[in-house]
Length: 256
Ligand SMILES: Cc1cc2nc3c(=O)[nH]c(=O)nc-3n(C[C@H](O)[C@H](O)[C@H](O)COP(=O)(O)OP(=O)(O)OC[C@H]3O[C@@H](n4cnc5c(N)ncnc54)[C@H](O)[C@@H]3O)c2cc1C
Ligand code: FES
Image (cartoon, rainbow, N blue to C red; front, side):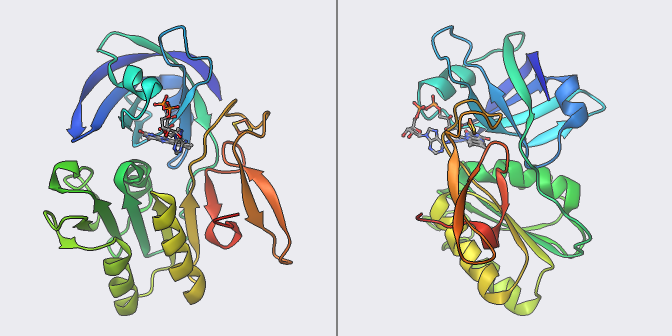
C-alpha cells in the first residue's frame, strides 16, 4: 500500500453522468488486483475524508489506473473536474480483490457504476465460456461493453438497450442453460441481494463487492462495518475497507 501523488493523464466522459479518469500511479498499478480500490483525497484542502474509488483497469506496464467516477456529491464532483496535469493524493491499492481461483466459467454481474470494477475482474479472469450481465439506466449510461473479453448481455431500466429488465433476469436464464463455477458482482445493494439469493439457493460460489461510507479506508476506524453471518449462524461485523470490499456471498447479511 502506498500514499502517492498521482498525476491525471486524461479525463473524459465515459457515459452520461460518468467521468473516466486515467491516472499515472506506477507504484499502485504495479500492486493492484481487480476488485481493489484507491482512497482519493479531494484536491480542495476542505474535505478531510478521502473518497474510495474502484479500479476499472490497471496497467502495471504503463503505470496507469483507469477510474470511472460518478459526480454524486461535492467530493466526487471535484474529483471529476480534475484536468490532465493535475495531481491527486491516492492511497492504495486497498482492500481485498476478486479471486478467480480455478473457476473455468465465471458469470460477471454489474449494475451502474458497479460495472467499473467488474470490467477489471473480467480483464483478469474471463474465459471463453464466461459471460457478463450489465444493467444500465438507459443506453446513454452504457459503458464497458466494447472491449469486453467475453460475451456481454446488457439490459436497461427503459428498454433503450437490451431488454427492459433487471440484470438478474438474463443471469437466471443463462444459469438455467449452463451453471457457472463462480459469480462475481458489484452494483446497487438490491441487485447484490438478488444475486446473493440466486447464488446461495443454487449453491453457486459467489463474490460480492460491497459499498459503504468510509473514514480511514485502512481498517482503523470501524466506520465501514457491515453485518456478516458466521458459519454457525451467529453474526459479527467486518470492515468493507480491509476485510472487503469483496465478500463471499454466503457471509453477507443484507438489511442487518
Ligand atoms: C469500495 C468502494 C468503491 C467505490 N468505487 C466507486 C467508483 O468506482 N466510482 C464511483 O463513482 N463511486 C465509487 N464509490 C462510491 C464513492 O466513494 C461515493 O459516491 C463518494 O465517496 C461520495 O462522495 P461525495 O463527496 O461525492 O458525496 P457525499 O456528499 O459524501 O455524498 C453524496 C451522496 O452519496 C451517498 N454516499 C456517499 N458515500 C457512499 C457510499 N460509499 N456508498 C453509497 N452511497 C454513498 C451519500 O449518502 C449521499 O447521499 C465507491 C465506494 C466504495 C466503498
Ligand atoms: S473506513 Fe475506517 S475501518 Fe473502514
